[in-house]
Image 1 (cartoon, rainbow, N blue to C red):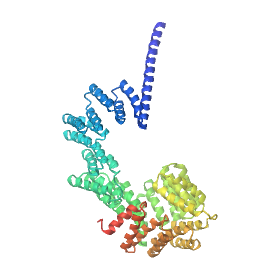
Image 2 (cartoon, helix red, strand yellow):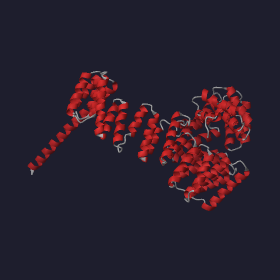
Image 3 (cartoon, rainbow, N blue to C red):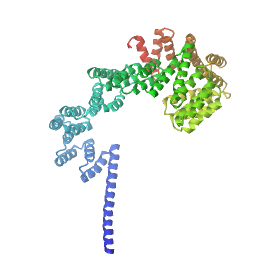
Image 4 (cartoon, rainbow, N blue to C red):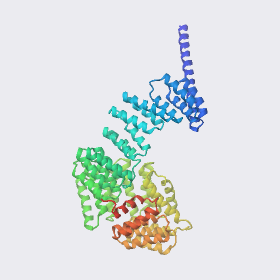
Length: 606
């Protein structure tokens, strides 16, 4: 019994010793490889070569050791050792056809171009007999930056065996050559073979597409897609065109493509809804209305119908211009609630109704009752957060700032690190600013300037600059408090009172930092009340006050829009757009200014 136990223990000990030495050996090799990599990356190729030589001698099957050692010899112009290494490796591994490329490249580095070409041709001839070698040989050419030969290898292999797919490699290579047309075509070939490549192709082509419809790459991509669509109607081409138009903010054109996709398969309306949603955010209410009207006419699904009704009502609210239209909207809300009730399924409609009652009908108390009741209709934290944010907005409208802050803070606490929490933090800052607590507002805005939401970050930065620039040297913050009061009145749709308050700011604090801010805010309110000449005068005054100020490009863009849309002076509009194009190359309005200028000049036909 003891002997048997001893034998088992002895064998177990032997096994452990073998494993131990194996692990030690593996660790040592890994450490040497890391050291070699470090020397190689630092450009110390002599030291790297001494390490890789030992590694290669211990394990010549490893292609990375072989290739790194070869590169070290070549980078130090030690072509004798490079040639010996290649010959030795070829002797051992004759079936590694990529070595023909390596031998050729080694000759080319020695200025022996003609001899190198002979080996390159031999490598390509291998593909003629075995197209599957296209991958290995093509990669060898790629790794040595022999782009044209790599293209020949991949393309020849695919021609000989259509089941092979090297279009991604080919696309990358054309990209390196800056041959954008062939690159785009290679990506589109991938989709033609398999539509599952759609998202990959969209991601890679997106690197070459901008939001400027007149950029050469955009026009080229559009041309190639339209050509393929004519030859072979395919959902993927329509989807890519839709995606391209969305980048260019041509939402109406994107909608046309999505309708074509739906007519072809008649299965899913979600992509049309996405176009309508994004168009609404971009204030393209015509496209939003068209998208959701189309959805409304093509579905019987109650949840989809309710979503469509929600957007159609919001568009109606945004575009209403008469009391009759407003009455029709209120009647429509009541009809929908009579039909679908006040329940979890109509929460979005309830919030839209509360917003309408507050900011359009001036009935905040009724809105508050609806929102408080809505809180009892859901157990979702996120829906609670949405409702509380809207409730906070209504309370701000009612000058109940402290109650609003409680609601915003609750959302911020209960949904930490979410987008709703960031929105809540901004609303805390904005409400604190409204009530004159500028110190607390700034502390919140400092955090939000780094927000992952670009829109919130921009709004936070704008408000942060407004507050920080106007509390310097004014311990009582008199000018900013008066401006904030006008801001609250504007928020509450008390437009004339806001304009009058801004007149007081301009009278009392002429020449101060707040003056341009007050002129700009007032110009926006003048535009809202159709006082376009007064708005124009304010914008021109800002430019006169400080031609290099942070509001100047905004002024030029708003002036261009005034001249084009309301004052009927396209020549002046073009002049304003040109100012942005030539004098403000970093302006956020640059692409839109360029596009609108070209339209007015007649370059773009809609």
